[in-house]
Length: 231
Image (cartoon, one colour):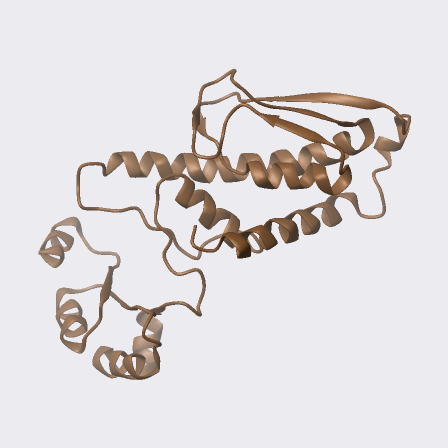
């Protein structure tokens, strides 16, 4: 990813938010276990997958037990098979039981995103196509899922509304047409920001290209029309 420091901070924020949501005023069930008890845990995958989210997993246990150790047998981006051991955890029994579901939620969600991305990446292997992500992420977990897409071999599109201009149908209608809105976008866009236009017809495509759009989103097109548009 292009934002390692930002991602590191985001991991801590994600974990803090998730634990606050789950633990609340305290894990009542974990209090049934003597405070001095230690425990060991092991994570084993049930399905073939691309592993992703190990940093979130580690941070969850560290937040509740700074002495906890997680021994990983795989790394983010590696494929695993059913029955394969992913990691072993040693921690206090109380924090281990409290952390396990939140840690697994991160690991499962991000591995799922990376795994599905890898399937799409492999499907277009050998072509000039590339798999690119969107802003349709879970609230609060955008950078995490963007990281998972990159881990699966996909490319990150814009992170949010601030680092790219995507002119959609509603923008075009409100601004008074493709040429007008693209010209305005070129005036306000920083030099490092792309201008992308969503089109549904070939005449819109031509107009967007003539207006100077640097990227085109072909939306809801029949396959034959899309072939013509790409040409």
